[in-house]
Image (cartoon, rainbow, N blue to C red; front, side):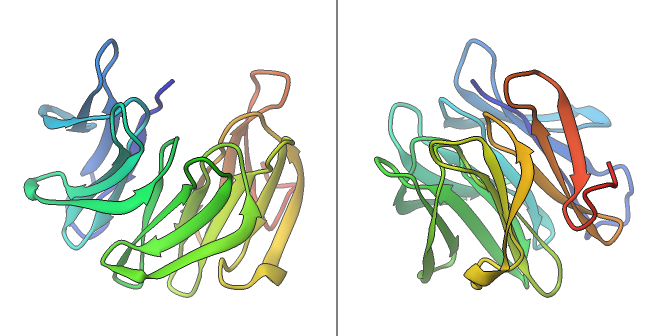
Length: 214
């Protein structure tokens, strides 16, 4: 199953510059579009059998995806096909993508294993293999100081959050569960987690540092 990914271009003055990326229905083509200007839809000459990830980076939008029929991870400026980077990394599910300190950061679950990984797309030596596992995709978000990661446990439905992916001691095991990947974003100075309930279809959202705020 595929899911759409949405992101705003924070560097532009136009407040309606909100874009979404998705995998086609009944096909594996990747599409991107301005939410408020559907005529700006772009059908990329790329395919995937699962969801893409989208983020604003250096005055453009960048997309990351797992290959169709293969597990290769790819990254590209949606407006410049020549910018495509085929990473020497693989995953059996969709990656996560965000911007952190003018770096384009990607996170993924390993292929054939459940290890979580984080890396600067343009500096592969920065790859960090976390001592954490999941059987679905992780999600990442950042502010000016820290890159944060959230995930569902491996073999369990527990949701977890790490305030600083470089500091294992910052891990928080939330008193929440899901059978699928959570979503994660920064909003109004706080980090919010979204998820589908475990054993039900209820959608939830929560400030990770203020569990009573929903």
